[in-house]
Image 1: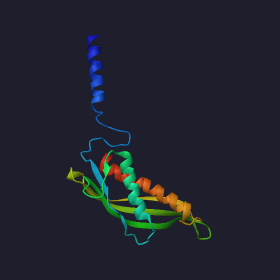
Image 2: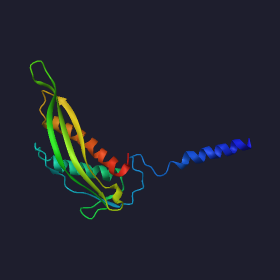
Image 3: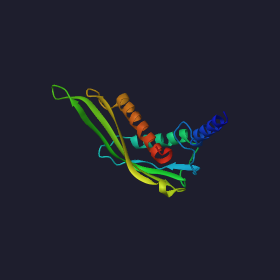
Image 4: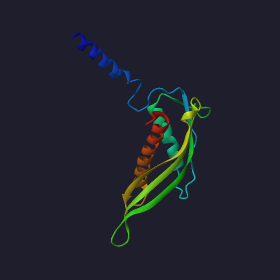
Length: 168
């Protein structure tokens, strides 16, 4: 019985020793930074869709503000996100019998440079890309375009967050 008690204590100790700091947004809580800045992401894609640069910049700011306790600043941030939209394209994915597009795909690629002034080993520069498929008869305008861009930006901003802060 005495050995069972020690075994139980050892089991509990090893179970909780790996928990550390964690929250449900994925951030480990071990961020030394207090502030972040998101510089404007210019649209350098060959095909220009007005406003997507502003929308992306705001989407990234909102995600970081909602998932961390970091303060947004316009300059001098501990964490700096910058880059550009490098690709915005619509491609047919499947064809119909009369040579029309049955399904199209909107793809957006964004090159991101992340700088962590508190821990330079976390710095990176890499592209993030995602897509949205829509019916071939639909034009990428109005609600179809808004849904596509919202879906793409949700995925890309979460991927950037995971790469820079959550370390997934």
